[in-house]
Length: 200
Image 1: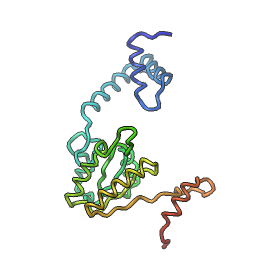
Image 2 (image 1 turned 90 degrees about the vertical axis):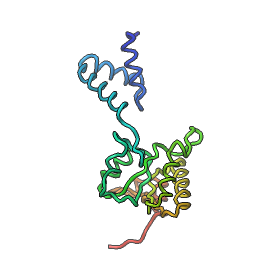
Image 3 (image 1 turned 90 degrees about the horizontal axis):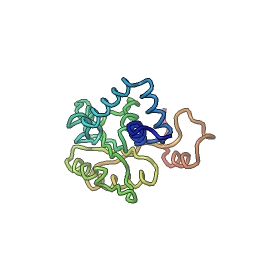
Image 4 (image 1 turned 30 degrees about the vertical axis):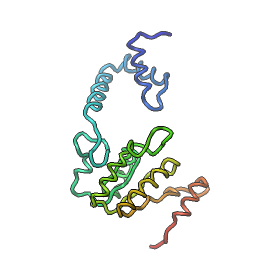
């Protein structure tokens, strides 16, 4: 079946979203056209506003509507403690834990030379400048354990060492409430390597 050009254009627009193939995009387009015209207009308005108004924070590279994001503007946060994460979704996850009161630096990806993602694309030149300013006392690495995540962590570690900043890494291993029999071998190995003294 051939769609009208505007319908085809709408379907194609939805396929730019991750995990949305042609069939899912067609269902979304049909849903809006059949019974969600007002929702569609609201969606279009929100998309336009976000695309025009959201930028990167000048200090941490997280999403912001002004030069600094709300976290970087908050004077109650510990400016000497900076957590390195790959994406804004990681910031949200850490914030939801309620345990972290420092600042962040959002890489917006991980080192991947094959994909053309090098240190500059991740803003590591900006991080290096911040490290050399002397305000940061500790970096917490919260990158993934993939090959790219490990390469990124080691690159950041080298930058921090050159600046004389201490570096720690979030603990990795067995999840809370998890049974060992259901945990994969690589995760168990990481948990054993990262063990620490037990105290009450």
